[in-house]
Image 1 (cartoon, one colour):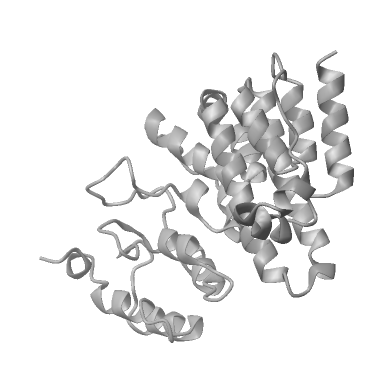
Image 2: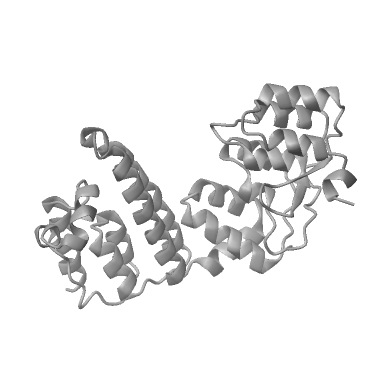
Length: 282
């Protein structure tokens, strides 16, 4: 028997997977057919079934919001501690790490269970850090000692590299979207860099020691504040070279990158990084 048939939610699954269906329509369907608040639905493109409240909290987006449905399920006392039905326990979602940000504080107040295997927890923590969700990490650390221990374990140079690479990818994507209106790009880019600065600062405060390669990576992209925070932990900055943005513009492989990140590649950041490296090497 198909699991959705077993859980009595096959038709609901068909409804929610229709991109044209609105929240109001799904809400009416749940009420009309008296779907039990603790029923399960499969997450898109997986064989993992999660409680309804998990499903709508995880798949919620600004384009397809499910806030009213989540509130309805909570009003009917759904059990947020019910666990996913999955054949891959080390890959299954965790409510407090995977739910949309709009629901995080609401769920956290209900003190849900957070007893998951160490390896799986570390993987989730690394994902949160890579996405610069430092607020969520901080709140989870305050509530659950296991999360604090996990943060210490994943505060490694490898995690830092992943964080910086994700920042660069997001910066290029953001800059590409704003390239026709560069005058509007400064604040979004500055805010994004700050989010990742706070994230890397969190790694540093939990024992992360960066390698020279990681520092060079941050230097290459003129991530001034991140370079400065890495310098507080690195043993030696000898051999680190600050590329000149004028030279990179002459390189056809890097010209587009410099154009996209014009708000980072400038004389001011070049001078600040050069000065910081000089001070550190004294």
